[in-house]
Image 1 (cartoon, helix red, strand yellow):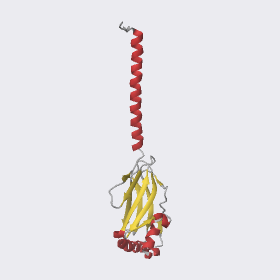
Image 2: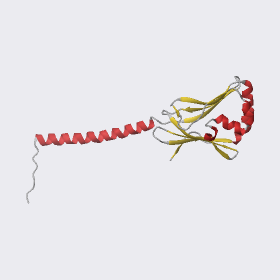
Image 3: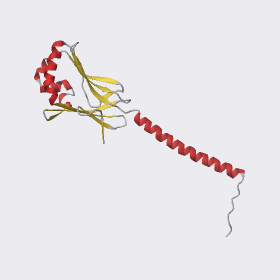
Image 4: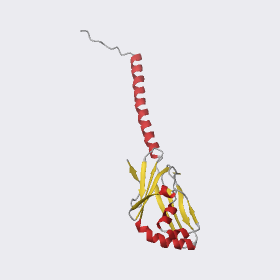
Length: 182
């Protein structure tokens, strides 16, 4: 058998070099695409927290959701447990204060209140604050605090939300921050 002998001339070397460079460029391009995908994934991560503001000097109490993340958070559901019984906020037209009134009818006497619904599909933009309710008069403030102090120890909550990448998260009053759901 005769051995096949490859003649290395400048054309073959140049062609092989061009093919090698093209292959290396393809590998680098795939790697960069993977990095960009991971960066995009992290760049739209929402981070919700429930924030309370109790300003006794100005007789003001507010409850809001803050998104400290870098992407919008889309509310999926809001549930509360009161004295061991679970309640879905949709049964109260998605208003938290309406739920609180059903648990303590004395809260119905509060007149000056700003409230917002926590509807499923509500998008809370990054670095923004969504006001759930706010009480700003002294009479209403005192009535609310008296009632809420009695209810507070029996009340737990859970808010499920998702990111634009369809990742699902939950925050509760028992956790330090959002927990990712599978």
